[in-house]
Length: 96
Image (tube, rainbow, N blue to C red; front, side, top):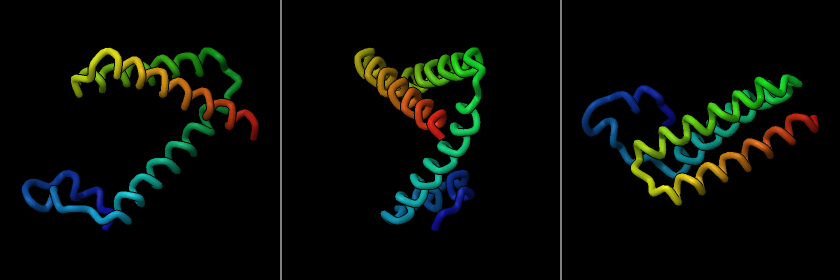
């Protein structure tokens, strides 16, 4: 069952094993929300705002990679992938 409340519970309730449908559902929700938000932001013609968003994505990614203790090679690969996804989203948003 998709419940955000469970993520904040303690003990066994928090660590219940999700079904494949629940995992796929959560991924679909994240993708849909992300795409909807990105489309609105990336339709902007303000190149400075887009550059600022790109920098924020990379900065947040670096912080996350650091907390996960990824190697520098993995961090670089993640940043390159993030930029590819960002640029693809930008192209798609501007096409519509």
